[in-house]
Amino acid sequence: MNAHAWIREFPAAITVCDGQGIILEMNEKAAKTFEKDGGYKLIGSNMLDCHPDPAREKTERLLAARARNVYTIEKNGIRKLIYQSPWYENGQYAGFVELSLEIPFEMPHFVRS
Image (cartoon, rainbow, N blue to C red):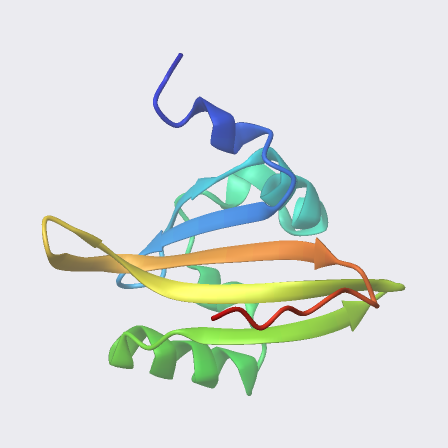
């Protein structure tokens, strides 16, 4: 098995871009999520072009600052956790990964010591 084969069918959308915002990889869930925008055909394009202002400006700031961004959204009756974080290769900044996970409206929260 390819070291990253499990990612293809993982039930969260995974999109990877380089430091300039060029989409490098998407898994099946991400391609389906962005199907109306081109799905897998988005690989090689700049993800900034998919964001209208002010989201584009915020994304540009995140790329430049290499800052993590985490939030939840609700769209079409589905709640999601969006986790955007820089990724590194051999200690060098390489771009961003976005994970989009569907989450229940009510879910337990545990505080552990």
